[in-house]
Amino acid sequence: MQGKIIRGVGGFYYVNTDDDGIFECRARGIFRKLGKKPLVGDDVIFEITSLTDREGSITELLPRKNELFRPAAANVDQALVVFALHSPEPSLMLLDRFLIAMDRQNVPSAILFNKADLEEAGEQAELLNTYQHSGHKLFFSCVEEGKGLRELAAFFDRKTTLLAGPSGVGKSSLINASQSKVRMETGEISRKLLRGKNTTRHAELISCGGGTYLMDTPGFTLLETRGIEKEELRRYYAEFASWEGKCRFDSCVHIDEPGCRVKEAVEAGRISRTRYANYRGIFRELKEQEKHRY
Image (cartoon, rainbow, N blue to C red; front, side, top):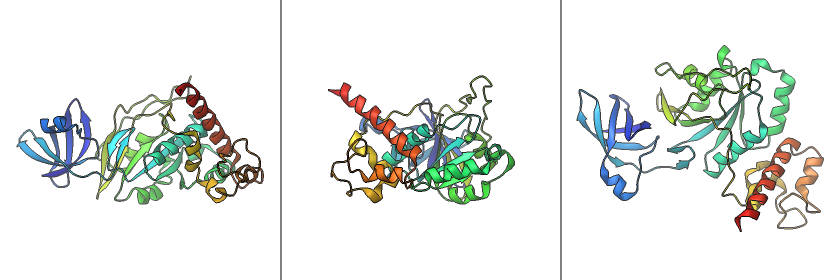
């Protein structure tokens, strides 16, 4: 039979089939010998070893369209990076890190600001202005009130979407609102820290039916930028693209060089100052890491 791994815990893989539900499977030892490990999101062939207990054995991993290293998952079509407008306050630097992490793994991503009922329209417009040229579509929602869910359902339709973002922003509530079979635990917000208690411990696929899957992931408080060369960073800021190759120096990284068209665009208001400030901050971090590398 063929199915999709929706969860992996302690050497057991839970495989969802379109017509026959979920089977608890072990992977054959050959995968270990070949250095292959099944991942959440993998499409697999498995044999039923007990129909009564709904158990099976995975015999084949089907070809992957992609493989993510964080979280460890396969066959992800897109990502939705979720932040709240308030409670907790959004860190746009952290948001940029999530976008870079997805871009590095060639996963198209969009941005959702949840709890939109708690914010004024003017500040939503400011966020739209900040990210309008970033290459990432923006959504606003209030999941608790059902606002914005129709647009998100269209975005999710027939795709496997990874939900990324810090704890307490409403990812689990969004999953609960998008399907009715699985109820995700939603965390309380710490009044002292205004941070969500981390209710998701591992990557897990939730079927919404019709070939639509949502992947819940553990909330992150820090995304490392290790592995990126500082000269490479500008590729992850789509709003810089119009000025690439037009600076005085071909090797311009848009930091301190004279005749930099990107900096001129920032001063002219054509590139978001917030996005550019985040770029400079991450660039400095990469430069510092480089010093300690040698």
